[in-house]
Each structure stands twice: as structure tokens, then as C-alpha cells.
Image (tube, rainbow, N blue to C red):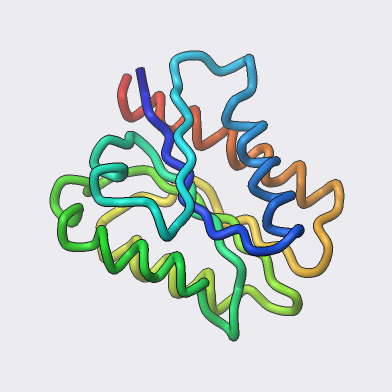
Length: 153
């Protein structure tokens, strides 16, 4: 069975809405053969990443950067996972009050350094998540589950 790891920092109602939409998409009944594992960024470890066939990352944009929790996750997994996870498909969703560009850029730079493969453009949401934002996150979750299956298949 393929394993999709969702690593998130969810400190606000807005990021919770996005996480729930990603989870609903990843767990849709139309996709079989994918185990969805969810870890808060402060609890996710290299063991989680090494066992994953795909990753979804979720973060708020804090002061123009990813959350400190997601940065902590990357600090802990970077070297232990650097060679063994090359080519790992990943996706990203980011919530910000005004701007998400700095957070997206930072996550993508680290993921590129780890040789992960972004299979989908990031979902960037500013302000309160609306129906379109929830749908985009649902789709991100579903397509990430499919990308995970493709890696295993």
C-alpha cells in the first residue's frame, strides 16, 4: 500500500479548514491503495518521511516565511532523508493574511535542495478560505494521493 504523509502546522481556523479539505481529497473513496498519515510539523520525523511515498506540506505564512514549525520539520529531516527520498512527489498549501510568496519560495527551495519533485503547483490562500480555496485543497489532496500511487506503481 502506498503511503501519503501530510505534514502540517495548523494554528488557526483557516489552516484547519485547508487541512480538512486536503484530507478529504486524499481519502476520497475513488482512490484506493493509499494510506494517509497525518503528522503535525513539530512531531513529524525522518522515519515518517522515509516511510512515505509522497508528501503534502501545509503551513501558514508567518512574517513572509513558512511557519517555524515547518522549518523545524525540515531541519530534522533534511540530512537523514537527503539521499533516500530524491524524487519524492510533494505538494504544498499555504495560508496567509496578505501574502504567501515568501513562504512558498522558502518551502520550494528546501524541497528542491532535497531533490523532491513538486507534482502540482502550490495552493496559496489569502484571507478567509472560500469554496474555491477548499476545492483547490481537496484537489491537491486527491492528486497527491494519485501521485503517491504512481510512485509505488
